[in-house]
Amino acid sequence: MFKKLALNLLATLLVLNSALIAQYSVSTFAGSDSGFVNGSLTQSKFSSAFGICIDKNGNLYISDSGNNCIRKIDTQGIVSTFAGTGEVGNKNGDRLTSTFNSPTGICTDDNGNFYIADFMNHTIRKIDSEGIVTTIAGSGEPGFADGYGEEAQFNFPRGISIDAFGNLFVGDSWNHRIRKITPDGNVTTYAGGGNEIGPDSKGSYVDGPSSQARFFTPCGVACDVYGNVYVADALNHKIRKIDNYGNVTTVAGTSDPGWNNGGFSDGDYKSAMLNTPTELCISFDEEIFFSDTFGNRVRKINIDGTVTTIAGDGTPGFSDGDGVLSKFNYPRGIVLDNA
Image (cartoon, rainbow, N blue to C red; front, side):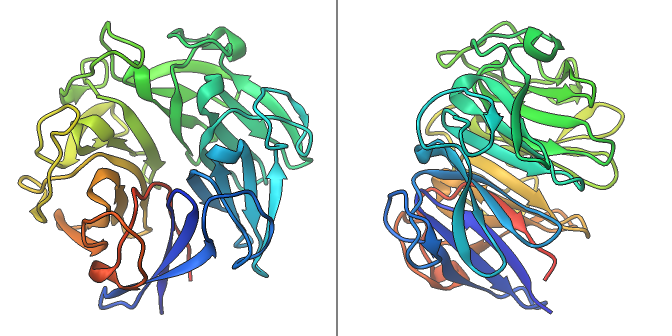
């Protein structure tokens, strides 16, 4: 039995294969140099690919941020444009004529709907199972406000995940908060706070009850089957957990907050150092896989709390092969399939 992890780099989709003894190998799954080309896996090109998700049929969907669209890789290995024209915009309607502005996070539900964090539009978009794109939250202007639908405001929403009840959780990066969107469109602040917002602001680091907790540019979010929400708290260089009672704790990472303060060390979660983790996913047995983006590595938090590196030697570059000997260039989106 093998596990496969799919990872987005700036222009290339990589796959990690793992036997149960947890030895990983890296291979290029799709893409080459930067561009916008559909077709076969080897012919295809992406530009600043960020979020990635997988549907129940095994198709992959990628937020191709630099191309302002959503791409699809079907189970036959054909790459196509699923939504967006490639032009910058915020047009709703048919998925093939809709427009986006640097989409980042993406997730899907069991009904064939997709949800996108439209980063530069400061909105959350939906592509329903009929292929219609709508804006479900966000006014389109950067800011901070809770409320229903377009009454709400986001500040560069980055990651997005959905729970078993249809609630969406968003890493509202430059509001330094985790936001929740209920199925009826009500946007609330799920965790985090503070007075500073915007790209020039500085978050902080505090564990505790959700209203008192503090984040610093939270990016990727992932929900587990128990109702916990995990956060890649990028500029705190930590992985955080919000349990279903609203308590925020640190799962891994000891580096000081701020730019250029990340580090690298594996080991116990209390001493491990991370370097700007941005995206994460969770296995059924509660292992956490994350892209340690500025560390140019893919790492794992085991169920015993130890942090290990499964791929990447830490130097930016591009090479396939044995996991820890391979090279990545600021890896971001990550997803785990069931193979």
